[in-house]
Amino acid sequence: MAPMRTVLIFGQLEMASAAVAWGLRQCGVDVLLQETVSNGDLNSFSIWIRANEVRRTISPNAVWWYRPSYPIVPLNVEQSDIDFVKREWVAYHQCVVRDLLNKSAFWVNPLDNAFVSENKAYQLHIANKAQMQVLPTLISTDYKDIISFARKHKEIIFKPFTPHLWITQKSFVAASVAASPGILDLKTFNAEIASLCPAIYQKKIDACADIRITVIGNHYFGVRIEAVHPLIRSTPGMWRQFFGSRGVKLSVYLVSSSLRKKIRTYMNAMGIVYCAFDFIEDSIGTLHFLEGNQSGQFLPCELALPELPMLAAFVAMLFASSKTFDYDSIASRISLEKFIASVDTQEISKGTKLSPEYISRE
Image (cartoon, rainbow, N blue to C red):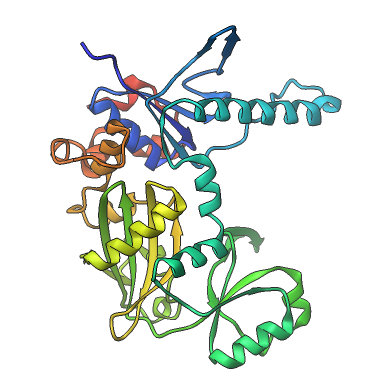
């Protein structure tokens, strides 16, 4: 009898990690969910090293690096010791992760490559090399350069490097203000604002649709997103944020062989096996590269379009521990719809710890 396969999910406990864990367990895989090295199914990781032998608490077949958190300092640490203990936990975290990297486990995505592929400027550089259409872009804090760029391209989009959400309270009502792409208002923009925070500036084009292409190993899943509400149409490149709303129309997008070749060139250059790509489609059908998110979400796509078996594909990739795999044999029993029907998703969203007994409950 073949030994049980083990998959380690290093990441936050949320719908995506819970769904993948559920799918793997349906396939008989031993799944370990770890939000940090000290919080999860394993209380700790140990590494024993002696002459000609290294032994570990776990040697997984595959690792999914899904937005993990750094370790939290225990509450009973003295105030004067917090800085020291925090550094020790971070060093331990890095030690454990590096040790796992030295094993032959299949990583989604390989750690060093994942970090590099998050670099926005490098993404544009690699997309260019892969023969993708890239929008004219400026990354700067220089007011003169930004104004010159804006005058050349008439309308430009301001984009932050990272997502952020401010929560304010006014008249006892909480309001959320998000940092997200939008048209730069040159009437209020000045040198002080430009120098306060670096940003990405891109030429605005008239979009007919946003295109999300999720690549899971050697499989491609495309979604076309059309804005039908005028307020949503004013933010091209961000229509995917409105999945599930009546303000957008979604349909399956067939990924051409030529685009697949360009995407494969990009992913090989980045050294990654999973990525969610975002493009803008203009009036003549040309796709303009926006970004490649190596930790992008895929469940909203399957939720909106159940005919895209993305959960089954992701589970099959981790099960096979390879970017080359087939998911047909499990697609009939592994789906987002079946996952939602089999577990209490409200409890998952609250951060309930998912034991094997809980997650596999029918």
